[in-house]
Length: 250
Length: 269
Image (cartoon, rainbow over all chains, first blue to last red; front, top):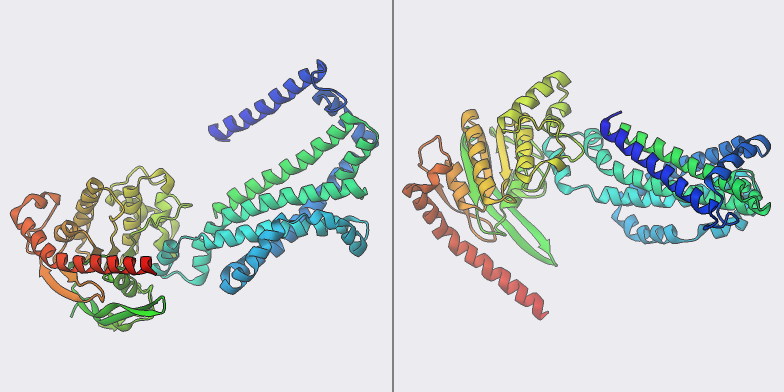
């Protein structure tokens, strides 16, 4: 690990630990009510019970798997969609506005309709997650495609690159950061949707667990479950970071 | 016959429903090892000529020939240096320079060794691992020039490569480029709007008229070689600059009047 990376990671960890300590003190002194925010120590202690009695590992694995599958579907659909729309001026003019509108539409409110169509199960969560995930990936792919500097394309022509070489040396590296930005936004939306719908209709993931603990008014356990939602997000973002770094070196 | 022949090249564009003739029957011959500059006022079609010769503009009238054979599209004997910043931001300086070799399938070991040699040639030794974002404008342009040399083109085609640089950097880079071109006897066609740059570098300066771009006059520059920017202070250099400016002034005035007229018309509309 390089010195700078080690320094950055240590700093991140130090900030998290410091924030947890401050929160611990505030809650212990009852400056922040323990009935509203659980102290970090009580939330961590509650995780043990969540693992022992509530099946936390299985629920975490389900949410993780649903988010992964939804993200995969969003990438498989969103990426080609973005490329197709970006390459055709007619399609771009016709659909870019609609895609932008879809990005800001509260698709989550359609969950009763999806429950009727796909049933009360994991498929509904995956489909709804993928649906909200497609749009940012497609939009960012379009943005990246259109942002390729004309001069770099001219350099490719002047070097007599074949279509495949141009794709490898110019198009993909130029668009890649935009695509990953789209996937990051997409992941946030997917996770929010999957956890939120699960919270509302109790299908059987972390959303269900947060909702169940909330209903029981077990505040430390609820925050313990939320910590695992955050952990899901952290794992995905770390994987994405590694993928981007690996791909950009190809 | 020259290594590069431009015969009767004309090009028109449709602008707001009107046909604008950018180039009109341009004839030009560049010989092996010669340095030729094309100079003209803004809007005379210099960059259009650059695009046509480089194969970026497929739709035109006339012929471009390299060694007597028609050149259609981009040609492996023509290397291009662009006015805009054209380094690949995700590649290091060395990776940028060796790109043409990578595309041609040269082994990594060989291309790295050749790349380092070219980087040393443009005076950027020690910056091999730097990304373009860590380099100045002049350094980036030197990387672009080194990349084109890696291509080993018979004809180097340059479109105002120092246009975006400050005067001091431009003079130093002109010296560097001149030194390289002279030592390699590199055939070069430079598109520029800078008179001193054209006189300093060239064997011949081609003056173009304002739109439609035609060749107005060709001046042989009979200054001793090797040349550097020191030549700028010689009386002969000043005479050439004055001679070119006398021709160019008329054309630049026409361009300025035409642009002023067009602005007034669009303002009135």
